[in-house]
Image (cartoon, rainbow, N blue to C red):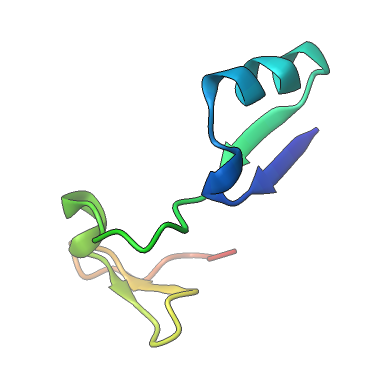
Length: 64
């Protein structure tokens, strides 16, 4: 099972506890920080929810 949470749940301890229960914990980067360089070259929709183009100018086959 995979659980996606905001960054408030990001910690080694939480990841270890989740792994003990066979849960893959995925935490998002909802902290208001500047995008990392690798993300800065992607083109996103105005609401930031969809990738429109990669740095190479290609549209994704899907985005979810």
